[in-house]
Image (cartoon, rainbow, N blue to C red; front, side, top):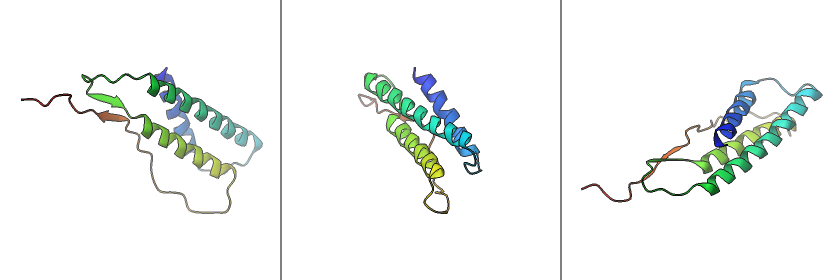
Length: 111
C-alpha cells in the first residue's frame, strides 16, 4: 500500500514542478484541484502506514514519514498558491528533500 502511495506522490510532484505555465483553463484548474484531493489521500495513507509501523531494533533503516508529510504539504501549498495567487511574487527557491530513509541507531554498541 505504501508503494502505491509513494508512486502517486512522485507522479504528482513531477506534474506540479514540471509545469511552468499558469492555470489558464478551467480544465487545468479542475485537474489541479483533483491533485489536491489525491494529496489528501496520500497523506492519509502515509499516516496509516506510519501508525502500523512496529519498531524493530534490528532494522537499520526506516522510512521518514514526517519528511514525506512536510513535502506533501509543500506541494499542496504550491498548488494552492498557483490556483489563487494573491499577487505576483518570486517562487520559493527551497527544494523538496526527497530522501526518506533514516538510519536507526543500533540497540547495543558493538564491542
